[in-house]
Amino acid sequence: MKIALVDDHKLYTEALSQLFKSNEDHKLKLLWVAHDAFNAMKAIEKSIPDILLLDLNLPGQDGLSLLPELIKVAPDLKVIIVSMYQLPNFIKSAFVQGAYGYVLKSSGWTELSKAITEVSKGNSYLNEGLKIFPKKEHKNGSMQMNGMFEDPYLKKKNLTRREVEILVMISRAMNNKQIANELYISDQTVSVHRKNIMRKIGASNTAGLIKFALDNSII
Image 1 (cartoon, helix red, strand yellow):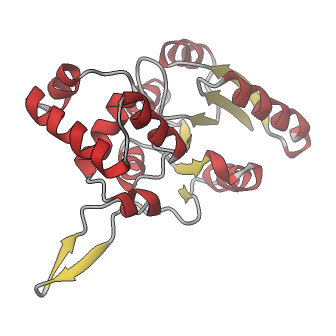
Image 2 (tube, rainbow, N blue to C red; image 1 turned 180 degrees about the vertical axis):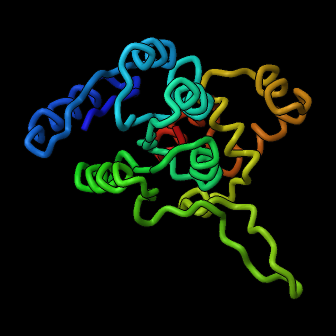
């Protein structure tokens, strides 16, 4: 089975490459590795793998927007997202865009190999413990969305869906104006969200926001 890998962390891709080499007896062969969307598109136009392992946080174009472009070139391609993100909206978006599986980087080789096995059979695969939808709860006799992600630490810190979106964009070095344009809101609204996030997580500057995002696998 031919596998391809798209991830911008070279140390990670090198380690995973070694794992595939040691498992060649299980008929898993690493076909190629790309570290960004541009090179991934160039590679897949030349050589189509059976399964592609795709990270979400890539330089330039992100994995979610790259995913449908890859499938357009190779309609039979089976994609497994391998990411540190465990936010339900990211997971849901990945499957909507055409992914077959979603695995956390923190889960290890056993989980990834299980995902590859299932996806190779045409089945979908979701890492154990992950959820596609935020928890629903009864309120005043009706079912309402909690409005919070399932991640325990984010829930504890009471970050809203919009605040997590903005935190991700801040971590990508986007300024208030760029974030406002992306989300179709005003600069002032972004500024208010930024201040609320900083207050909730106890950060005093942008570096603190990025550290929180890294420490809690948001990016």
